Length: 105
Image (cartoon, rainbow, N blue to C red):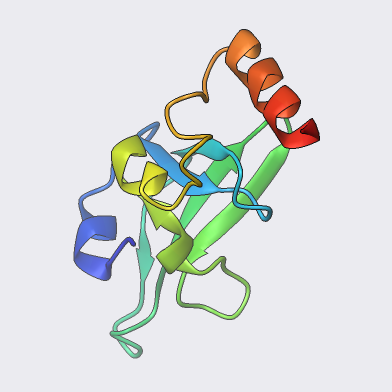
């Protein structure tokens, strides 16, 4: 989970990790801008991120942002939530194919 304090230390192109909606894959995104905060709303913040070829999103506490509880700074933190038979098999194309084979069983 990313907190406001951690978000303030993020820099451009830093990698973040999260689980996809089915909780079977670890996905990677990168920070694409600076953290936005407000003086009038000290608890609100967001960070722009990019993932995939054309996908953009925000992580933060504002209404249009993704829940920061789904995002982590290291891959190891995310892999704790993966099912046991999938752990450590994500990354290269071959590993993703192996994952698809596991899911077909």
